[in-house]
Length: 93
Image (cartoon, rainbow, N blue to C red; front, side, top):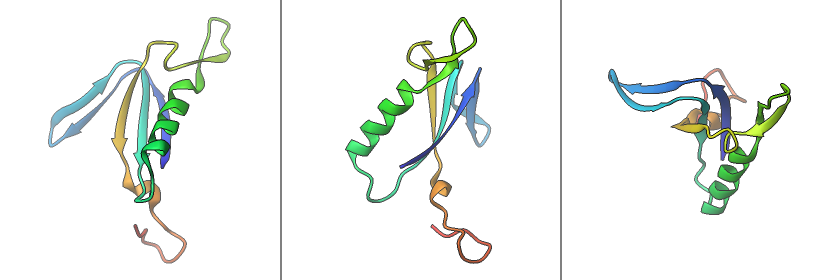
């Protein structure tokens, strides 16, 4: 599994003009899943993301997790995270 995280104050995902997901403050997670990933991998990554201390505390230090601030997650499937671009100019999956 591969994930790219972005802190957001709000975010939404639209499909054909219809909002299919929306959050207020928290994290957008672009998630790529490989064929050999397991439920254990998913559990590990979910816990890791929830516990990452990447939000500022009252002193301005990155010392709080999304869980501690009561933030939300918007997870978006992103198979392109597994694109192989070592050969040529087109990624292959």
